[in-house]
Amino acid sequence: MLAPFVLLFVAFSIYPIFASFRLSFMRYNAICDEELSPCGSVRFGNYYRLFFEDDRFHKALLNTSYYVVGAVSLTIIASLMLAIALQADTKSNRILRVVFFLPSVTSSIATVLVWGWVFRGDGVGLLNGVLAAMGISPVEWLATPALAVPILVLMSVWGGAGYGMILFLAGINSIPTYYYEAAMIDGANPRQRFRYITLPLLKPVMTYVGITSIIGAFQIFEGVYLLFPTSVGSVGGLQDMALMLVPYLYDQGFIHFRLGYASAIAWVLFGIIFIISLINLKLSKSFEDLR
Image (tube, rainbow, N blue to C red; front, side, top):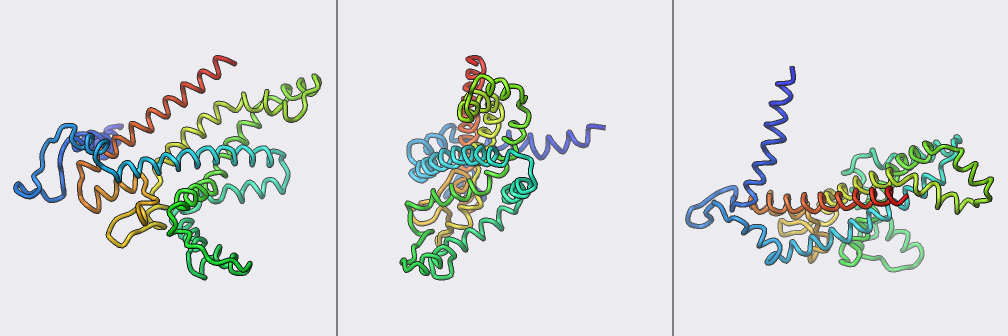
């Protein structure tokens, strides 16, 4: 009974993983030419080139690091603030919960296109229209290198805060009320109750939200691909101002057809996410032991 599922799982999930791992040690292009572009094993050549020779990879890694730190930290803070603000089970709060959660279930392509209209550099863009009404000169939002990562962080927080809010609400509602009652009897004010009761008991939820947010942030693709295209058949915008790891993987694998090199990028990305997740879990367990 399990054989059909197992066969499909092995064929379309397990085998591609091992195949990509093998390709990461090879020079493998879409078309192999024994004279111009021979294919074969390069051992750790792809990884050596990534870490010591590829400036675009370094740029993508740096941009992704900035993006992950900003997006994850701000998303957790915004989600927790929304959960606390909408904790009471009232009709207005239920409506607001739905409103804030809607971006999490809306098509990512559609939301990116809407944000593209908001940040358009001409007078058609919503934000520049508001600035023009205030007598301020328009800004080329999507052509300014210093604004690329902050724009992507803003989009991430807007789209992910509602999902984190639901998780934090579930965690807050699962905290027994007698903890707060005992603290109130002892004279604890709201700030102390939040610091010594709510935050410690929300650490498992915060760990889950943090890990899932980190994994999602490292895999950003649609925003970069749609908002920051280039005219040379590549991705990342002007001067690679918005280049991230997954768009760079796509660029190498499906635009330049360097499939072995793209596989190496994928495994480096997997290693980064795996290590950060382990560190997050270890820190969470340490906090639990100290408590």
